[in-house]
Length: 245
Image 1 (tube, rainbow, N blue to C red):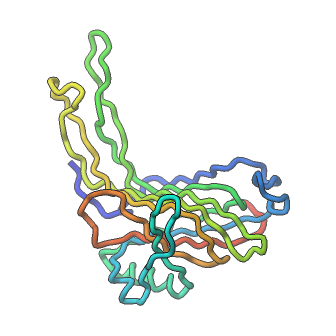
Image 2: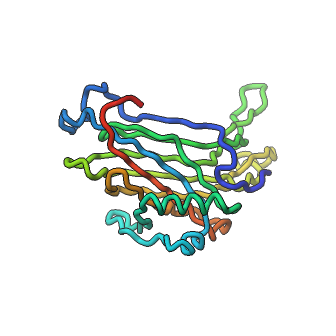
Image 3: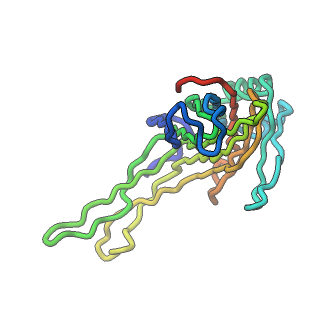
């Protein structure tokens, strides 16, 4: 058994994954050649807090739009530097709130990249089919607590806006339930079932250069725990010239 732990309590793994492969001198397919030197620096923060903290500072997060394809409502708000500082200071002053700043990413215009900041918990998820004269062996899986961000920036022709394709997920291992492996219950082999708290936001949105948007990462599970709290993704893209990551 494992007890519930606050999100972001300990970070064991940081992975930066560029998902596009092209030579630095080449534009991303579908982009004009002059786009080859355009890069976007992206800073992202994940903040777990109470909505009351935002209300007290007149920074309530409301509905931005509805995704036509899925009907999902996207909630958030645009922030200036002062608003961002208010949220960060308030979070740091609250014992019940946490903030995690993910590693900065620098991506070419149209390049997809990923950031993973997570810790892993191994557990027994099943058992192998035994070879002749041998016993079954444990099958080990891993559950991850942490944040996962896939992002692709697209710079406007006038370089005043960056359109971000965002897929962000937050997961938290709440518990590991012990049980009997259902494929051979007569053998009474023990397995564990991870109970996960999950949240996700997937959208495409345009942000002014050097601006910040706060998006609510919506819960995707049926658990009752932590329903009085929300997770905000604060993401800030800035257009820069050619360079290296």
